Length: 308
Image (cartoon, rainbow, N blue to C red):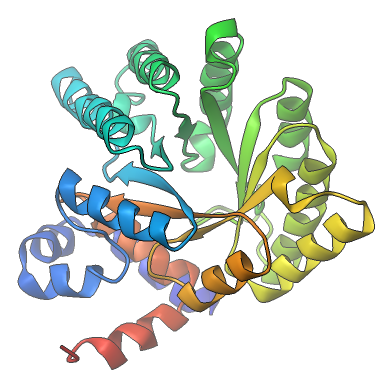
């Protein structure tokens, strides 16, 4: 499995394959299991369908590492349109975005300014923006930006962050975020990181995810635990029951198109579930990271490719 993971992570950086995939009907057909579509209306339609199933949504306009301020502002405009549409349609949804899509690699000040504008809009429309975590080189600057924005009284309820359990530093980061009252989405992590800073073995990542989940559940904020792993979910349920933590105090988060059976089962059991719904033309890196994260998805795609 580590070999397959490395293979798909490497493919996620392959520019010629990305150009071909994002423009070909084969690539679009393959990606449709995990991507809501190319346009805002596609994402909103899926969000409505997910809401009808009793689950909330986090909408993500795919894209990262823009090359100009104009591109960053154009990417932000998509989120402003999403926030207005969420409010107009009364969807149970919020948004997730990457800071490199807002120009972080060009200027941290630019990314922070754009993120603040989106967070202000989210607050005004009664929504919420989750700042996604990217590779480990950006962990500190991402936390600093979120912490500064969250420190503004009017934005405290409008912004949160993602932490990745496979990094050694994540326990200290979560301690810091809990102390600051910042809402966290905990995931395992989907980037290729060196063994000096990240757990190389799945068993160690799993153990850290369970430990960090307990820290989040014990805090006063509402957090999201992002996993499709039955063992991780069972551990979270067990901790919550043992410590008298009501299911309304947290939510499980899962990716669109993955473990739909499990999503429905959790809803039936009385747990909150939020589905992360990505959309847009720049879907290739996200798609490859999903294959790297869960190689079983490859077999699923092969089996279902020729079905109508």
